[in-house]
Image (cartoon, rainbow, N blue to C red; front, side):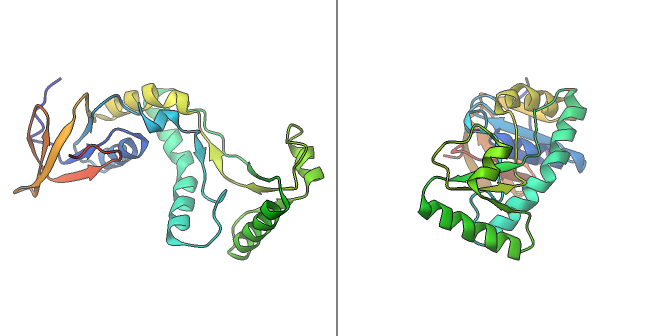
Length: 214
């Protein structure tokens, strides 16, 4: 694999799911892209997480971050389809629903308030009494005091790494695994990224996540 990145438009530092999604989006816009990952693609938190595509599950207030999470969740089916088109493989995406559980009276009160503000804000959320929740999911715990139903989804994170890596290559992204970035400095293009074994003039840099930049 060549370390010559002199003609790359965008360098994404960090090959987790967020960094890889940024890389694929940039490629779809016609930009040349490189992903610089110190380990393996989607080999750290992206593979260890539970895979919940959660926007409303724990949202107690209407904030810009919550709205961003909702936009991301709603866009995820298109992203999952893109990965399938590029690789012929499914990431195991399920559109939900997702249940939030209360097992104490205090948690029940909190769940009631959460569903109330979400419904007032025009979001899809449903408060469930224990009997109705168990009718929908018989394996819920016996001490359940309430549940809430949200349109949040889930993905199989154990499938991420090989599928994402394959999708990047199929899209024409330059993948550099085992490349630790030591610095990002101002340059004429306007910045320079310094991996441990190469330097490249790049037009744009995106930090995809993690603690890659020293």
